[in-house]
Image 1 (tube, rainbow, N blue to C red):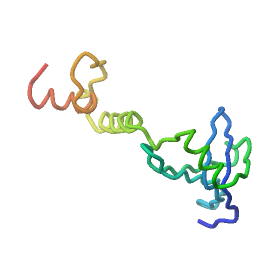
Image 2 (cartoon, rainbow, N blue to C red):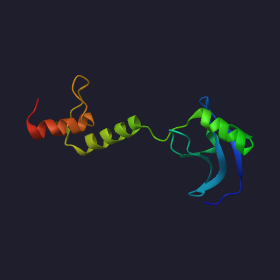
Image 3 (cartoon, one colour):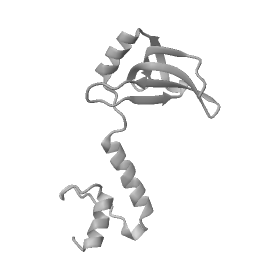
Image 4 (tube, helix red, strand yellow):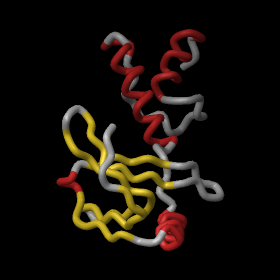
Length: 128
């Protein structure tokens, strides 16, 4: 990835989202994107987000100190466990034959992973 823009900045995105960090211009597959690297803070892992120029409302260059204070305040998190669970669930459901899919709401039973893995466990053990 080639980089020609580099600055600590506040990036304002459409949808009333804001992110602060080290901002660079990145080229991916021949297109220009904005990469924002947010360092780790207590309780939050480092995050890298890449945005297309059309998603950006504004960019405000800042000092490193100010950008880091904003980044810590915003607490942008990496992909959440709920996002990961939904992704895994959808992949498991897609892999199962249509008759083996359990699309029912299983909120009244203990959580064993995902509803799809629960369905597989039910079939394996004969538990209903």
